[in-house]
Amino acid sequence: MNRRYSPSPLSLSRRPTRSVGIGPVGVGGANEVRVQSMLTSDTREAEACIEEAMQLVAAGCEIVRVTAQTKKIAENLEPIVAGIRACGSDVPVVADIHFKPDAAMEAVKWVEKVRVNPGNYADKKKFQVREYTDGEYAEELARLEEEFGPLVDEAKARRVAMRIGTNHGSLSDRIMNRFGDTPLGMVESALEFARIARTRDYHDFVFSMKASNPKVMIEAYRLLVARLAELGEDWNYPIHLGVTEAGDGEDGRIKSAIGIGSLLADGIGDTIRVSLTEDAVFEIPVARALVDQIAALRGKNATPIAALGWDEVPWDPFEYRRRASAKIEVQGVALGGEETVRVFTTRTKWNALAHKLDKLGDYQPEILVETSGVLALDPRDEAALAALRASESPRLITVADGLDLPVIPAFRLLAAKADPKHPILLKDTLFPATEEGRDFLETLLTASRNIGSLLCDGIGDAILVQGEEAPGQSLRLSYNILQAAGTRIFKTDYVACPSCGRTLFNLQSTTQKIREATGHLKGVRIAVMGCIVNGPGEMADADFGYVGGAPGKINLYVGREPVKFNIPEDEAVERLVDLIKEHDRWIDAPAAVAEV
Image 1 (cartoon, rainbow, N blue to C red):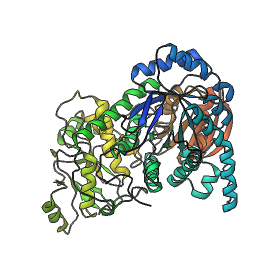
Image 2: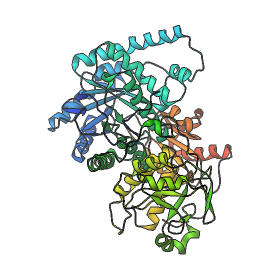
Image 3: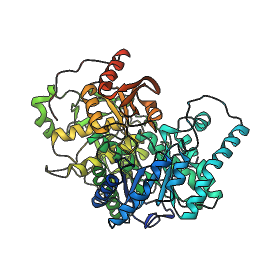
Image 4: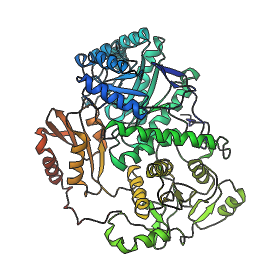
């Protein structure tokens, strides 16, 4: 596989694509990166959908998506779209389709775009293990074309766009058995559908590769873009970015910034949706901030910081592997090698927290940067790098403050030029904050994008958040970035999907109840899913799952396996706790720790 998913590991330039029209809104090409969201209202309630859509538009949403579970429900898209137009808005409406080709054929009559999931559009997932001969696989593809071809023809005739949106949690059995539960399987799943579209000379589509794990998501998008480049210049289709089931609060924003922000910084992405387990209107400011940050960064740093080819980097952008540094000891704390990624802080922040360190639980500052002996370098300084290479002993290194360099390319250049034995201290910014009161969302997104992206590259043995002056917030942000990147698990990990019209219970209140009951279970991963569209698949990495099975009824999972069915919703959280206890993963909650 060609490693060139971008011109260079240091490139900030946006990937060139064709423009695809979604009604009056262009995606890709010279258009700015578009921000979109999804209605949480029931599609059968037209007035509620219209009101919510207009709230999203007022907040800056440029494309609105609504679920259409069945043909009958899809019929209600007609009054929804008409109502939005009657309110004076031409915002494009997208129908979200899973499992039901007849729903897609109805939806395409009324909307500007249809989203199909290759994993379940024409396949019923049974988690069957079987070997496909080439002939049997060809038969499956012929059946796929028979199911999908009519929608392509209708979309082409009506000039309706399409998203071919792969989800890691819902790959077909055909893909799973030939390619596995992998980024490669995600890419091939989408390409199966794209080839059918192209044979019918239909090109008004975009791709997506969504996953709840940022590492998987980043690798899948990179692999897709590299594969499209191999296929030829006319495979230059736009890309929709999203981390599915990101969750809520800081955790959801951090995970989204790691996945979406790092890809935008690599030049990948033409439209984005931040999926939060909150009211949809709260997604828009986060998405807009991510887009605006990258636009400003790209405008400021239009010139590459150095020439670095893909054959010069020691990491594989399509497969996570941590950079092989040497283990050293700093202030009595081991870092580098196979040690966990450490959290640095400043003397000033340490002093501000010193009186309550014993009450901070796992949110502990571990090393003081001022006395750590870290060697700060300009990664473009060949003389300094040559002196470092002459050092027989490993040194903790970092990029020097005050350099007007984009953070991700600067640390990638350092990782490429320095001997891998030298552990690296990552920073969120090269210009430390000097006063409190900065917009914390901007700080959070910047830190998550910069540090999280590098961690997902396998770069980094310690981190230092400098962009947040408040001691407690900077410490909490440090640990939450490590958790979201899957680098250092110190608390319960939640995979929680955003609400939509398919959701069978109140996701926000239920997620909060589950957090209150289980938030002390360090290292346990719990999936909270509103329906079965992605539930069983996205729970592949989860220990336990809480999934809407029917209105008012919950199914509980251990891993991918459903073990408890049709539990009344008011009993389900307690039954989840019982299930965790049955599997010896329960501990009693410790005494409350101080707020940081």
